[in-house]
Each structure stands twice: as C-alpha cells, then as structure tokens.
Amino acid sequence: GAGVSQTPSNKVTEKGKYVELRCDPISGHTALYWYRQSLGQGPEFLIYFQGTGAADDSGLPNDRFFAVRPEGSVSTLKIQRTERGDSAVYLCASSSVWGTEAFFGQGTRLTVV
Amino acid sequence: AQTVTQSQPEMSVQEAETVTLSCTYDTSENNYYLFWYKQPPSRQMILVIRQEAYKQQNATENRFSVNFQKAAKSFSLKISDSQLGDTAMYFCAFMNRRPMNRDDKIIFGKGTRLHILP
Image (tube, rainbow over all chains, first blue to last red; front, side):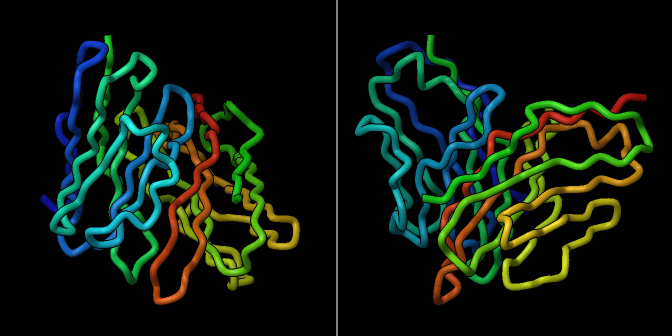
C-alpha cells in the first residue's frame, strides 16, 4: 500500500508482559516518528528517527520503552513490563527528508489489563 | 522548549457556518512550520493546512484558511461553509526547520473537538 501501515491495529496484553508494535513507513521516507495518544489528548512525542538512527528520543517516558529501525525502513516500538498506564493509541508517521508533511498511520490501540 | 496551546477544548457550530479555532505557540526559533491536522473517529491524522513561518501570506486550502500572526505567535484556523464531514478533533502543531532539510519533531496541542450540527 501507499500509506503508513501499523500492526497490529489493536493489542490487548496483561500487565507485566512485553509488546512490540510495528510501523511500515511510506517507501523512501527517511524520517519516522512515534507518538502516544491518550484518550481525548493530543499526540505526545516519543521518538524520531532519521534513517536508522534516533535523532531525538527525548520523549520516551522511561527505560521500559525502546524503538529500533535497523534498516532505515520498518520500525518497531518495544515496551517491556507493560503497565496499565501504557494503555493508549500509538501513532507512527513518516516524512521524506525534503518534505515537511508527515503522513500518519491509523495507530495501534494498546490496552494493558 | 516549544509549546502549542489550544484554548478551546470543544466547539459546536451549525452546518454552513464559519468557525475559527485558536492556537498559540511559544518558540525562540525563527524558522519553523505550523500545521493544522484533523483526526476523525477513524484515528487517521490528516493534514489540513501548512504554513511556513517565513511566508507572510496566510495559507489557504479551499474552505480552510489560517490567520498567522508571527509576532503574536498565533495561528488560527478558519473553516468556511462548514460541512458535517468536518466533525473531528483538530490539532495545531509546530515543527522547527533545521539545516540540511532535516526537520525536527512535530509538537502537537491538546486539540479542539469540533462538532458540525445539521
């Protein structure tokens, strides 16, 4: 497809478990962003990649959160020892290095029970 | 640190009316972009309109226009002839422009929930 794809669209996990959320950006986009959006709130920045490297990871809330983008395309957001407070929609976006419009996926709704 | 403030949590207007959503931001940078994004219940964030800070002319996209006041750090969105399909959350957002065309993260406001009433 031509857009940003996020899988799974919904994930329910038990407190304390490990989860991985995947983002497939638009082909050729070098910038990739992860955001977290709680109900009724604006997207909260987590991490931003330029190519394979994290250009800014200042939004990761603690060391339970980690993200990788090993080949500069697909990215995985990893959450260890999940807590109920991690429940939110996790949004991914990508943009080209020459552009300023970020294209968003439809998000993964994570529910920790 | 940059911040984006949307002071209207929720608004309702009748179909075909004009509505203005407010946004203010804070930055010490001079070169940046401002955006309005729409998020319907489907969760898909859609870019509505974009403004480059160095351009004095206000951006316009069909029924959507902005009032960009750089000195006041204000960036409001006007929706003319509002339609039922405009019902959504609207987010104001800010992004620094960096050298070498490598842009910065996008910072979002908390959003305004807009209801268009039939």
